[in-house]
Length: 346
Ligand code: GDP
Ligand code: MG
Image (tube, rainbow, N blue to C red; front, side):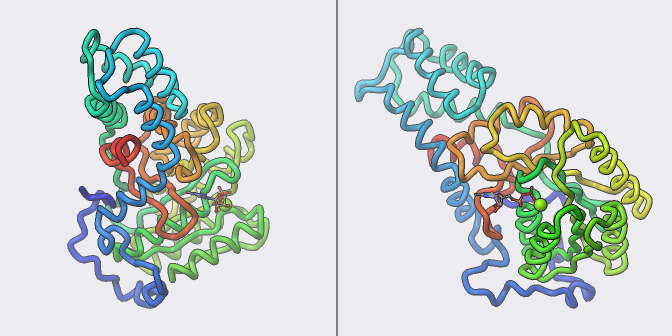
C-alpha cells in the first residue's frame, strides 16, 4: 500500500538545479530519514500510525474484547447496546456508531459470533465510512503548487507545515515556505527553524507585516526559484473574527494574482484532541475559507481517534494527512484502509 501518496507520479524525483542551492541538509542528520515513505517502507509508516492510534485502539479493541467470552457472544439487543456505548467512547459520534451497530446487527443478529468476526465487520464498516475520492495533494498545472495552511490557534498549523515540507522534500520536491503568521514573532521563528531543518528557503515579513504581502512574496520567490511547492503559514483565527476571515480572502486573492489558479490547496488543520464541538465549529470556518482538505493533527495524543469519522461525515472534505507527533517524520498521508486497520487491529 502506498502510504505516502502524491497525485502526480514523479518520474524524476531528482532535485532541479534551483533546488540544489536550497538542497537537503537533513540527509546528514543521524536518525533522520529523508525518505520516510520509501526508506522505512509502508510497514514503517503503518507502525507509526499504529503507534499513534495506540491510545484509541487500547480503549476500543479492549472494550470490545471485554464483551466476549471464549465461547463467543450472542448478538442481541443487549450486546448491540453495549457495543454502541463502547464505540462512542472514541469520539466517533452517534451517527457513525449507529451505522456500525446496524451493520453488525444486519449480519449477526440472533447468532453466536466470535470476536474476530465482529472486529472484521467493524473494520470494514469504518473503511466504508472513511472512503474518499482522493486524499492526494493537488498539483498546479504549471509553476509551483501553492498550499495555504489555515486553522484556529494552536491546532498544529506550523508544525504540520514542517512535517509536510519534510515529506515533500524527501520525495525530491523543492519548496519555499512563507511565514504568513506575522502576528507573533515566535511563529516566524518557529517556521524558520523548520526551514533550516529541511534546508529550504523561507520568506518572512517584518513583525506585523501584511500577511497578504508575505504570501505574494512567497509565491514570487517560488516562481523565481522554480520550486515545486510554496507553503504559506497563517495566523490562527476563528470564523467569528470577520476581519481575519477577510484577511484570508485577501491572501487568496493576491496568490491568485501572482499565480492564477492558486492557492491549489487550502489545508485546514484540526486538533484531534479538541473534541467534537470544536471540530463542528471548524466546519463553518472551512466553508468560509474555501478549504480543500484536512490535516488532522495530534492523533497520537488522543484516545479519541474515532473523531476522524464525524470529520469525514461533516466536512465532505478529504482528510489528506494525519499528525502523529511533533517530529519531522510524524505525519502520514491518510489512507482509510490502513487507518481502520490501525484503529482496531494494530
Ligand atoms: P499553530 O498555532 O496552529 O501553528 O500550532 P503549532 O504548530 O505551533 O502547534 C501547537 C502545539 O501542538 C505545539 O506544541 C506542537 O508541537 C504541538 N503539535 C502539533 N502537531 C502535533 C502532533 O501531531 N502531535 C503532537 N503530539 N503534538 C503536536
Ligand atoms: Mg503557528
